[in-house]
Length: 270
Image (cartoon, rainbow, N blue to C red):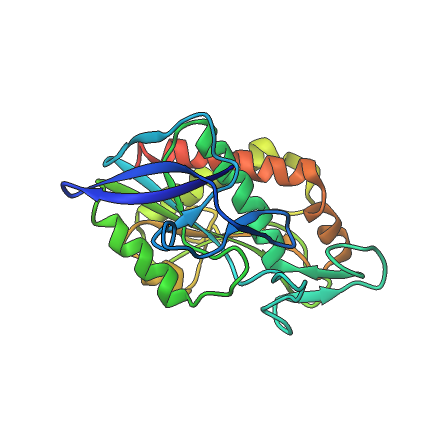
């Protein structure tokens, strides 16, 4: 038995539905099951194999958070689709494969954990990234901008890990230039990460010249989204010590919990 998750438009609102189906399926390298294309399921939008215990989630009309796991991940053959970019081979340790750390794999680990927590809290979300394909930024943003027109408030969070030549370490958050509601969300997230992760990481990298802790950049997902957006850099994956932390289940859990708290609190400032 497999559970399908999709969005349906109804009177200018969005309804998130789940559907139970029996269908031939493929198992990805990560262990997730994805149905083969059949006449009955060809129009399903998004698969979440862990959804269960309910057939319909309430109408989405007030708030929707878009989760974006940066870059791509491992395909069914175990190939990192974003190679040779966004990866680093460490001289020791296993990491994701033979010493290789794949940023896109980590990005999906934390994003999927946030999604699971949101589901448990019945907070509507939509993942704009693919399970492993490195879908273009234009597509991710276009999907979010279209769906955002159907709800009163929305938020975009892009999850990443950083690279800096091997010596740089630490956590940082980016928003678009200028003072916007994105800065309010970024400050909430900064505080939540400090509360949940604390001194378990070596450094919090900030720019306080404009009165808050986020850094500013003209990243596509920050300047082309129609809703407040933040880009989170979870430590430096090409630094051995930081990479070990990014593989630590407790650290990832704490990063994800901080993000969920930010999403909850952001609804009050958007």
